[in-house]
Length: 144
Image (cartoon, rainbow, N blue to C red; front, side, top):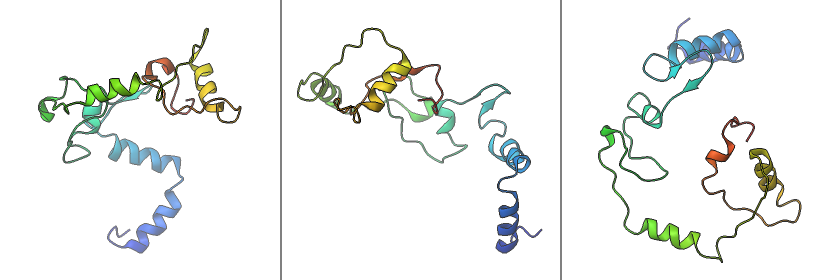
């Protein structure tokens, strides 16, 4: 096999692209190499710092989410945008922008069902779930 020959690579790719053994070899020897991601047989995990670090990208400018000073040293100190907190508070306290729904007894699945079916059941359409990550813990991305 001449790996500098695009035609040979194309043929091999077509043959191996759905092969579980070839995919496993690629993942174990090239993707999940030591220092890229921590893994074990039961769980795959990595922090934002690891995913945005020099292993995958040459430069990281920052992270989205709640701003705080708990940034990796490699990113330096957090630079807060003047007025952002005030704009968020103004938007979240404006009754023309935000409404609330009292749910009573709920579960992560019932909240997701409520949001997912809102448009088809002639209920109000939801634009966002604010800070809902903690509500759906224990569910995979596919389940959500």
